[in-house]
Amino acid sequence: MKIYLDNAATTKTDLEVAAAILPYMTEHFGNPSSVHQFGKKAKVLLEETRETVAGYLLCKPKEIFFTSCGTESNNTAIKGIACKFIDTKKNHIITSLVEHPSVLETVDYLKNQFGFKVTHVNPDKYGRISLESVEEAVRPETFLISIMHSHNELGTINDIKNISAIAEQHGLYFHSDTVQSIGKTEINLKGLNVNAASVSAHKIYGPKGIGILYKNENTVLEKFIHGGGQERDMRGGTENIPYIAGLKKVFELLIDKGEDDKKKYSELKKYFISEMKNLYGDKIHFNSPVENCLANIVNIRFDNSLKFDEEMLIIKFDLLGIAVSGGSACHSGALKPSSALLKIGYSEKEAMSSVRISFGRFNEKKEIDYFCEKVKEIITF
Ligand code: PLP
Image: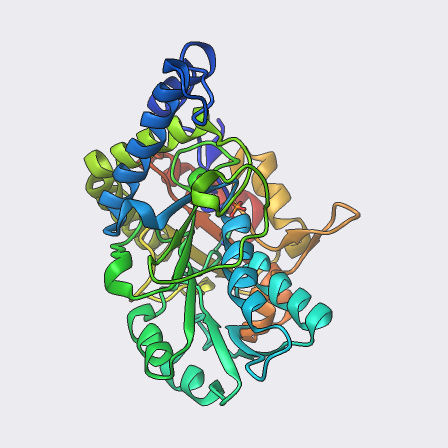
């Protein structure tokens, strides 16, 4: 048996999405910048996709830009805003300690290369960023706040609406990494009042290598891929039309089945939690919060009084055919503890005893039964 419970890392591409991609490689292979009918066909698809995406995210089509991934979108948003403040008195960025590396390393780069100052706001024990901590971090030199919508390891959802209100009150730019939230919880980009937000297709049953940057129509970003003026001169390079066709299908499916998906995630998560509690009682801890958490993610920790090899935990699950995640691989291939959990305050041992389970559209209840049963083969209770 092979069970995939790592949907926050990536998802299987939906067959309908895969089917939507192929014709734009083999039949409608035109370049959208060409004036002939092959080009026009691609151009129509490009603009239709922008409309579909904007319809789902509740923003304007002209606010949607196609990128190669969530990482590129985060880089473009943060660097694109920061570029305007190089060598000015406004030189301070606020982010959190537990952002995705595509945000953390981008602000590190800006700090090391251009001398920007960065405040990393501390999260609470669930990885949540409080309004007070953001407010306290604001200085006269601040120009940007970047806080993720939901945490990729814990599922914790931040109060982005009120964090963006702080940014607005102080006249600051606000960016949010919404990669894990799209399709998992309600997102209304207009309502969130963000200058920029990032989306990745492979977390929502699309292919790897295509993402979205949402940029509010009143926000001007410095571009950093110069070229043929594509994407309204924001990102040079011939657009990835086949994957954009896939992305259109991704959002059509979210519009059609998104509510069913969310219901399924919630049911699976509820069932998982109750089965684990029934079987293992207080020997299982839940690192994820009960409230304001994504329906598809639950992060658990095995009590350190139990007998198990925490360094081998994820590998042992893998040997049983169960794909889950915890920590990250280091250069030697060995697992090291999740840096987010360490920053939140867990010890190395606790972090290594933690596992993220993330559900997806294709999971079934019987897979949860299998997981819950197999735990006994790895851990002596
Ligand atoms: N932001 C978050 C919160 C993520 O979880 C990820 C992917 O794991 C990314 C950004 C990066 O997305 P991509 O893999 O498309 O670069």
